Length: 171
Image (cartoon, one colour):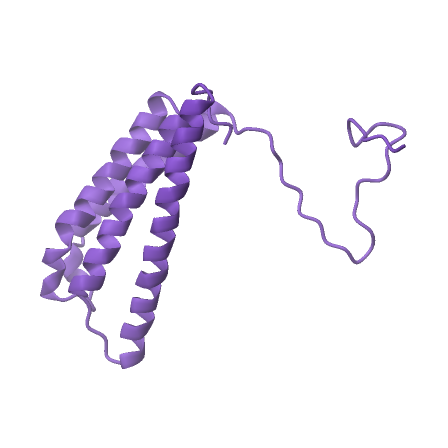
């Protein structure tokens, strides 16, 4: 009967390194510290705020040469999405139990989906070559699919957090 070593440094444990020629991905399952998570939330909120500033103040969306005047039709939902991201990340600074992270992730994914669908519908871009429009549409389609998956994952994490009693989210 084989025993499972309790730590890689136990004297009776085999060498944990993979055989020659094999590759191994080691994933550290230790939860990140509260401080590092808070720093990440604050950075994410600051990036969203900087994007709002860049869109509306300097340099402004008008400075982007491939955006058309139809961009004003997508700005309200883009702004709402960025503001939602700021609010959610600031809520995480206060506390980040698993259920709240799941709910926040689902909410921001819903906003992302709304932005992507609006951008697909309005398509406020002008490109010199036809290939770019096709490539941007492909990227939007992938983003729409990813947002749908993100909504499902967020809802599952939210429900899992509620069912588990709201313990702190490890990652």
